[in-house]
Image (cartoon, rainbow, N blue to C red):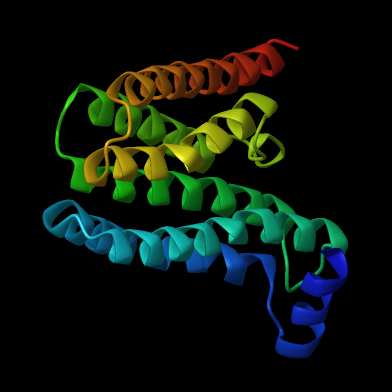
Length: 189
């Protein structure tokens, strides 16, 4: 995979930040298409949008590989890129939750992601990278959208969806806690 992203970097000038911006600018479009799925309940549209979604999500994986593969220079600032990557994740999650309406689970997840976005913007440069809890949370959130869409469009078991939502909310707030306790821990040193 590293060879592939380095090829994109050398041949087309793709940087980790460009891959991150793809997630940011795709977020409103994904929200719009998710709304269409929820209205029309089309299996074909669901498959197309989920494939598009996983393609967009893959940029999160690819930008990390590329950022580690290229040295920090005038074209790529790792601390800025880490902050931008974390913000892109928050923007994407917030946008894809909007079509599901205002309810307790969307409120809790959007609130937590907003808190984490604030932390990503205003934490010291050396604390802008995602922590292990944040990566686990992002994995859970990545599969939340397909589960929510499948629940809305098919006969996906409600109990499985609700348990997954609860697990994702818990992991999200563990991530919030770990980011802020991590900051305070290092401030006292």
